Image 1 (cartoon, helix red, strand yellow):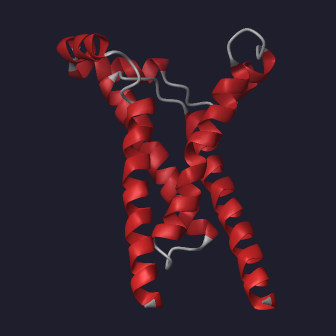
Image 2: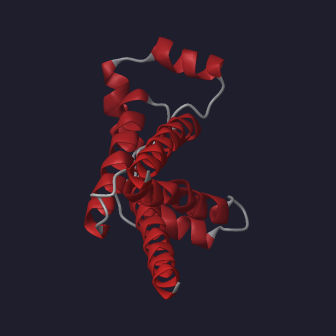
Length: 163
């Protein structure tokens, strides 16, 4: 019975993970209205992808410093913490959905990889702007989510042990 219950829980957590990833892609990549996205696609050429490199932020902490410096004018708080918060569920859902993947470095790599893929897609598609600071903040969010998972699991095991 316990194995059936844990399998059902894993299936549910994997479904939640898939839904989360779909929502994340919708919020980050397809954030503009459909007509705007259609216009970007209609005007897209390979030379546009090359031009995307010119607008990309390849300097670590450049955007973060700008958000901190101008926090009162450009929604710096929302941008900084939004990137972190957006990836925190990933750090929880990976080890919950796949119990064998419960190491910090693995979650760090998955968070980094997903963020890098999103940023590269934005670079090539022009559905956003490539920013290394986003990769850093997103990866940090995944790591913080894993740390929350780890603490909750530790407390849960301790409480279970005391019963």
